[in-house]
Length: 317
Image (cartoon, rainbow, N blue to C red; front, top):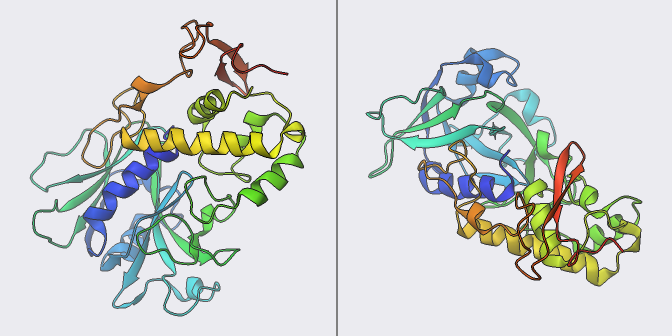
């Protein structure tokens, strides 16, 4: 499953290709990939054709493209009365990558990929591919049109080129992520301390801090020298700051490397895989020596997944 850095790599790639371009045609090759759009392919296409992509926005692992139509914020009367301020976009194209979803920019002359599900044709722009293609081998991801609603705190909905105080409705329940300039450490620490749970379980709670998945939680905890089961109500402020900064650092390193790829399913908009998997310190390295102390990395079962840690550098007490 792509995590925050992988989705941010896709967002950054999409911005340079689709922002400001109009969707001129929509082709749904597999309706299963728009199953979250309850009104079906015809309504999906009708909402998109003629709309201009204003931006590409991300919060946590959620990715969406606010739309504008005929010089006005796109949307049906129902979405326009949902509380969005005048002049702000009311709807967006939401992309859920799932386990194998890919958003690829391709020229129309490029042969269709085997698992192509949705094709969006874009208005011409010099030197830029004509199509945005959604490819998904396992069909766990998908595209759908969604409403934009005001943010609870009045701040931007997420990372964007032109941040606006609206957020895709499906993402409105999650907290800000560590790379968000509006992320509040004080609020994070207060809520973290009030919980009686393990540290990693808290880091994976998208209502507390979004975008941290299993891989980057293990990597951040190793950098911060904290055990995954450390009770959150015992964390000092310095401990919480250390693990949060470690999460930011590991995500920034992953972004520089284009994300983490273990197979061919995660790629950026140009079809290239990320290389951060070659720089992992603990995740998937059970039995290998810790790069700090040489102790063998341990893997333990955790929430139907696994946790990887160094038993010497990351003591449980």
